[in-house]
Length: 112
Length: 114
Image (cartoon, rainbow over all chains, first blue to last red; front, side, top):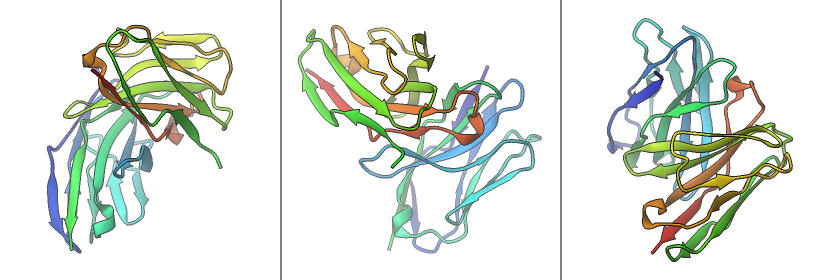
């Protein structure tokens, strides 16, 4: 089947620290992979995506690389800011299908 | 502005009283979907629609109904709400088969059933 597993939160970091949020997936076929971010009181927003193996998605200083050999799509940022505090969701979708599978979300707290 | 609009943002209701949560998108997207978000469970798909008059069940459809009479609207109907339907609900849309683009989400509806 298809599923996404991401690390439990919350993750608490100081400003300018390095961030990694782990995400691994199980999928049939060749899925596309996504990271979504949810700020307090808002809906989910697409943060970055990768549609094939070895692709790197990037946006707003965040990066994630599609690793087929380890079935992973870990989110990284070199220097987090207080404004990055949010819940981050890893997700996958299968080619030619609009069904998405979401992880359970990881809450990030960044302290000044 | 391209967006998905849900109403209401907050709703408190009593068990058994029928309610409708509206969802509208202005991007001419073919595909629309409803999700519920619960702590520790992430987002779970309730229903989806691939076009007008085409709907199908997601992972947790029990207790919900949907309709797609127009391309832009996709209301979620709870005929007889129960407390276990207390949740945060999101409507989302995308171009059908354009999975690379991802979803556009609404801002959410927080429903409490007492």
